[in-house]
Length: 120
View 1 (cartoon, helix red, strand yellow):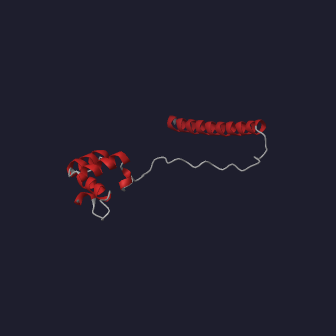
View 2 (spheres, rainbow, N blue to C red):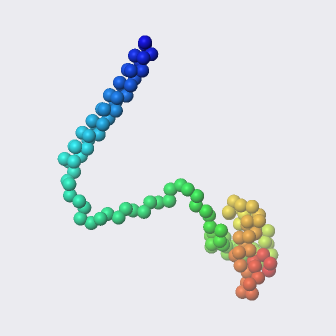
View 3 (cartoon, helix red, strand yellow):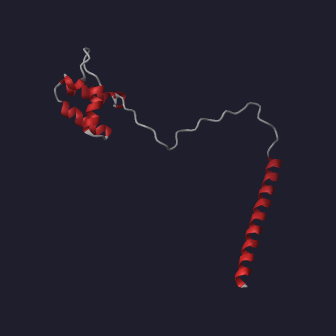
């Protein structure tokens, strides 16, 4: 019997809280109607575009992902025959492995004859 009484008290409490919430929303809505003018805006307001929030944004995989100073330094090092040092610089900058660094350096390009940077 006491279990039945407790369940009915619980259901009654939930109903009272739900009714109070509904009544409070109704009162707040009626107050807001009186406080704000019922005029429509003269010009339609365009919503501002949302900034990128979360999600997967892939990093660029072109030679442009290196700063211009680093690209110039890498080209100079390759031209001087110090390709391994250039690979280490790029690898440290992109936090990648050696193969990715070599690929980036190769895409940087070589001289005007079309020779890739690492094959000079």
